Structure formats: structure tokens, C-alpha cells
Image (tube, rainbow, N blue to C red; front, side):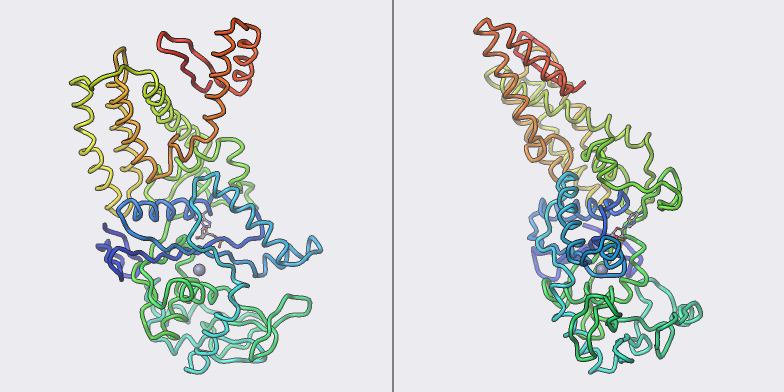
Length: 466
Ligand code: AMP
Ligand code: ZN
């Protein structure tokens, strides 16, 4: 598999540190609100990367953190007259609700910054001991000039960074490019005890600490949105490599931004959407499908039109799933027909196309196209009378295999609510058999109210969403 590495600015063949294993770290959300539709992009895309590695037989250790202490979390707590941990715990819960809706698998570990203060202090102490950091009145700063590779990720010479840097009011740095590892406590703020007095960690250090704790000193892949490349990831590299004396991450992956109606999303422009709000309009599954419609390194435009297109395409996919499920139960017994066998024989070529797309720096747009090509053939062989159960079962398994890698479509994993619908349909059939037509009609109306339309066919009852 080839991945575009921001560090080398090239697509490179992925070579794991340890055969058959992948160690991935992805920067997670700052938990002071519901996450927004832009945040959903890295969460979904790197979930797909993790799923693809697993599909290819790798054992994946995936860490995604929660930034549960920072200015925004503290501000929100003050506004509500509560403590930072109440805010963080609330939005961590809400993260999992939305993430589950979006089909994002739980990471192997979801560590919180404040659960790792000891590990953070350990790195800061080492950096001070090695001369890479210094303390001033309870603050500790990283001495950027002491790390000769600074700028290697964002490809910026230190002189350029120097020219643009300023020392903010209240900061006492040796050099404007230096950044905070530890911040002295301000009155009323939560704090932890350190060798430099009460304080709290700077933002960048938590990822260096949690990556090392859960994955080791050198990891395979580090990922996040392109806005994190500088300064966040540049600073993570400086901290980790200066501390451990080893490369931090071998591959750095960055997703491009999601824009809203071709504009940057911002609260001031009034085009800021949480996933919760967007899901209420389009559904979580359409949002995920929409994200996969573009390569993760291309800018992506969120608009009503693009979401409706995604919803319609997903509906086509789901109709194919429903049709096959129906035929698995109600299709003809016996061997596949020659035409069916021919369609099944082509699955391997579709699988190859799908993998070629994914192997090319995770080109999900082409991978989705490969699935739809297969679906068109599957559908045409599954139309008309005499379709066999055997064929339907094979086609269903094949579609499930590919769709599960992307986490789209009504696979068993996703189609939880279908079981309820099937149950009601069976109850209606039983009522009809017992000639209780009033009850049968009541069930039909109940389903109709949920947007489920029934169709009585010679092979049994089919259903679709209105
Ligand atoms: P934050 O909670 O702001 O630290 O962001 C969590 C993740 O979302 C990071 O990987 C960011 O780079 C990413 N992110 C934030 N805004 C956008 C956006 N508009 N498009 C894509 N990714 C974004
Ligand atoms: Zn990070």
C-alpha cells in the first residue's frame, strides 16, 4: 500500500515497523462541544484506514486522544459555573454517540490528557535535563533552536518561522519560536503539581506522551487534519525526538479541509454545523458516505446538494442489500444459473479494483466507484424471476465484505433497525393468515408512518423506504 507522507512529500510504500502490525495515532477532539462536520472528516477517514489495514490482515493498535484540558474547555466550564471535567466527560459521551452513528469504530485506546499528567511531566523533565527546555516563573518552554530538524514536517526553514514569530503578552520566552510545554497555573484554573510549581500541560505535549505510553517511542502512522501540521505536529516531533532520540512517526498523514458551500466553516459566517445537527437532516450514514466520495487529501465541499446526492447513492446501495436479503430467503432453490455463476466469477476482478484504489493512498472515491460497478452487475443478475438463493447469498457476502471496509451500506453491522421492520412484517403476515385484516392494516399503517412501504409480490413481501 502506498501512502502520501507529509514528511517526505511523496507517496511511499507502507512498511510497518513490525511485520503484520500497525501502530497509529490520530489527534482527537478537544471536548468542549459537540464535534463539527469538519472534525468528522479525519475521524471517518482514519477509521477507514484502520479498517482497511485490518481487512488486509494487519493487527492495528489505534490511539485517538481526547484533549480534555485547554482554554476552551476551561472557558465553557466557567460559563456554566462548573468544572472542566464535567464539561469534558459530557462531550466525550456525546463524541461516542456521534461516532457510533457515523460508524466510526472505537479506537484501541481513547486516552485523556489529564489521565496522563505523570507521563507528560516525565517528558518535560527529560527535555529540561537534556537542555531542550527551560523554565521561567513556573512556565516551561521548548528551546526550538536546540532541535536542528525543526520545520522538517511543514517544510519551513527556521529563519522564516523566526521572522513571523512574536512573543505574546505574559510570555517570557528566550526566543519567539519557543513554545509552551507546561503553563504555570492562573488563579481559578485547574492545576497539577510539578517540579516548577502548580500548572497544566501545554497542548502539544499530551500527544507525545500518549503516543509513547500506548504505542512506543517510534510509531508507524500519525494523522490529523492539515491545520495540525504546523505548529502542533511539528512541535510533537520536536518534543518526542529530542526526548527519545529516535524518529517519532514514520508516516505523517493529513486530510484536507472540509468547506461549507465553498467557504471556510466558521461561527462568524453562520455556516457552522455540528454532526448532530447535520445528522438530523441527512442521517449519519449519508454523512459518512459523503466523506468517502472524495480523496482525503482533496478539499471537500459540504452543501445541501452534495449531501442529497450522497443520500440518493446510498439508497441505491441499500436497495441492493435489501433485494439480496429478500432473495436469500425467497429465491429459487438449487444451483446457480450460468449467468449467475458468471457474475460471481467477476467478483475477484471487482475486489482487485477496490484494493488497487485503496492501495493508492486510500483513494476512497475510486473504491466507492468499484463497489458501484459491482453492484450494477449484481443487480442485473438479481433481477427477474428464478434468481437462486445461492447466488443471492454469495452476492450479499461479497457486497458486505467490501462495504464493511468503508463502513457504508446496510451490512449486518449497520442494519440494526431492519430487524424491527422484519418483525413487524412477519406479524402482519401472521395476522393476514389468521384473517385478522384489521390488525394487518394497522401494522401496514404503522410501518407507513415510519416511511416503510410494503409491496406484496408472488415471492413474498418486499419493502423499501419512501
Ligand atoms: P480539534 O478538536 O479542533 O482539535 O480538531 C479535531 C480534528 O478535526 C483535527 O484533526 C483537525 O485537523 C480536524 N479539523 C478541524 N476542522 C476541520 C475541517 N474544516 N475540515 C477537516 N478537518 C478539520
Ligand atoms: Zn496531537
